[in-house]
Amino acid sequence: MYNKDLDAEDSPLKNNDVKSLENNNASEEKDVHIKKKSKVTRLSRIRTAAFFGSLFLCLTAVFAFSFIIPCPVRPFSRRTWSVQYDNAVGYMFLATEDVNEDNVQDILFLFKADNSSNLNMSCADGDLMSPCFFLSALSGTNGSSIWISPVSDDDNIQLSQCGIHNLGGAGHSGCLIIGNSEVLLAVDSKTGDILWRKPTGIAFNSVVIKPVLKIPDMDEDGIEDLMIFLTNEHELQSAIFSGKSGDRIGQTCKIDNEKPSGLYTHITKSKAEYVLFYSGSTIKGYSVNDLCAKTAGQPSKLSDAKRDPEWQTQMKDFIPIASSESSGKILYLLNVPGSYYNNILVVKSEVSELLDGQKLGPLWSVNTTDILSKPALGYFKKDALSILMEIGIGNNRKKVIIVDSKSGTLQWEIEMNVGTARQNPGVLNTGDHRSTFLFWGEYSTDFNNTMPSTENLYMFHPSQANVLMHLNSHAENIIIFGAALFERSRHACYVLITGPQMMENPGNLTVSKRKLKEDISNGIVIGLGTEYIDTEDIRNHFFRMRYSSH
Image (cartoon, rainbow, N blue to C red; front, side, top):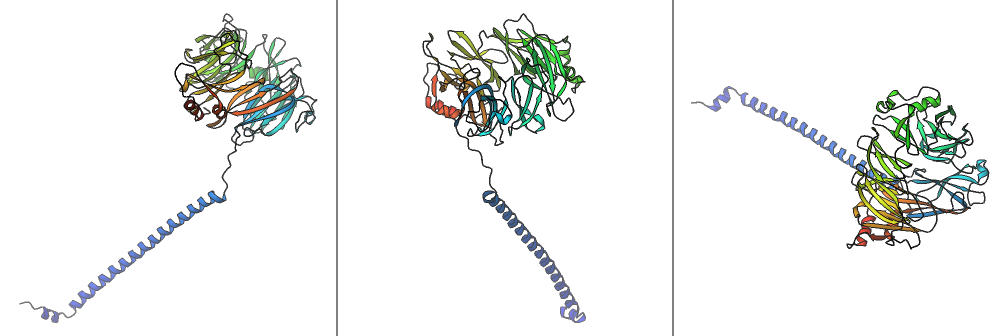
């Protein structure tokens, strides 16, 4: 029989070795466990430290941005303001631009005054005779003067154009002024400083045609140059000037023997640029590439790809676009965006038509006998472009119509008294992909026109097609009116310059800005139908409306 004690006596070290081995194994496992536990503990401490460190950094950043680093202060814009000038006359020029870089549009305008006017600048400061023209910038937030600069002592201003980028190499926009045809003046939009003043070398009796055309850099100084069109007696000419220095490039170039009424630039389907001159019922097109080459007396910096092949097949001395048999005198040309390229709206004194911007064939026409103002583009339906027109219908009455830009079909119309303002309508795009239309007149059911004429501003939005909002009335003579979005998605306003105008005796000239919401709050809701309308609900609807720059 097996005896454990005997076995132990025969091998006395056996059990001790086994126990020792077991103890050693246990000790090793314990050491490994302790080491693992130590590593886990150390890792846990690192994670904890990282968490609290990150938390501390976040709290520090929040504290810094909240209490130490000041947040940018958004400028406070007054709802309405007005500025008056004594012994002054107004001029038909108005532009908006963020001059002082506070993200609010400011106002640029021209007026004529003498040294007796209450200004902090005199004609003598610009080495000019009194009275003289001043170009001024007013803050869009409160109407304070940003700068004022004397620019010309001529009897009239032939051309005034702002928003010309990098004029004079300033890195931002500038304004170009031509008094008589002998002097060309560039003004810095940010400061009002004169960038350059250069003689044009053009005959004194020449008449400049608006606008100035920006062209590629012909003198290779890194700045785009300027092409000016003018007429000398009945001859149409062109001249090029350096956008950086104002120096003349090349010679005066004869384009045509016919004096045009105006000009318009058009981009074809192939992105080629053409200048269209219109006179009577005829439109003549010229390639910008060719005009640059002829005027500068050197090959154009534009490539041949900037000539449209389809248009060039029609080229002789020029490209005929509208035949002389077309009815009515051409008053305006407008760009009307199409699906792939811009079309051309030809506004005539009898019938207006939309031309295909590439093939130049008529797309539709509408009766515009006695058209009263330049048409405006907006959106009656969501993302569907429309055209607003004002057409006289006799007895001092007019019809305001909105037509679809693709088909020319009537979308909305209203009749009213004309009034004496005769200002172009304004359009402000709204956040619902439609537009607010602003126009002047007098809505009245007095078809015999026995009521005295007043200057009333009306607002129409397609979301309330049976409603007209009477915003304001003005007794003063209105020189120019403009609507603009002064801040992105907010602060929709209109600007008025009222008082004596050119060829009138100097007097009190007023520049005012009014916020659209201010006039909506105090405006009158006019129902155009027979059904009941909740005027307060409609007023609140218009007041809550947001605006878009697109």
